[in-house]
Length: 186
Image 1 (tube, helix red, strand yellow):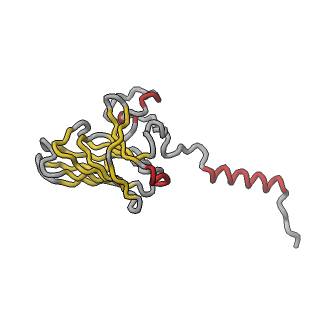
Image 2: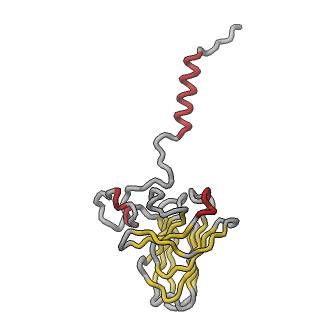
Image 3: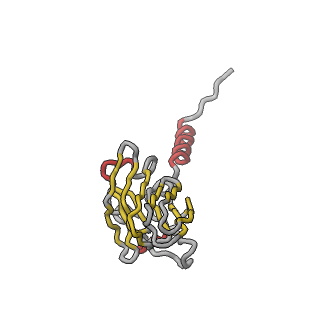
């Protein structure tokens, strides 16, 4: 019996096609800006200049829990946890935790804009996210929706546990990033 051998050009074509398939062509990085609209906002196209706005993304609800006025409570969903202290909420509210991408530690806590009477503790696990590679340089940021500016929030980074915890006084959008999330391509 005679063995058939593939000629060199056939092997190169197969190898090239295999590399193209395995490379994941066309897949955006997890930190790439999304151009989808929030379902509760106008369906008009979103311009790239508004990429820092919370409404320029699709948010996936992870948790929803009613918290009574003045009660201590913990609301958890996905990699996020908010611990309210007694007397923190001035009125009862349904607290909703939403994320836009499970690979990016970026969260909206609704009702957005709610000012707390006493600070709550927000804990974000960044294990397994795009931020984990920069663990030593991470900071907690809060987006001021009225100005579109990200502000640093005092927080503690537990590198061993890969969690960031900070006291928050307003419910809104928070992110863990090594630099201003706008400059990180969000």
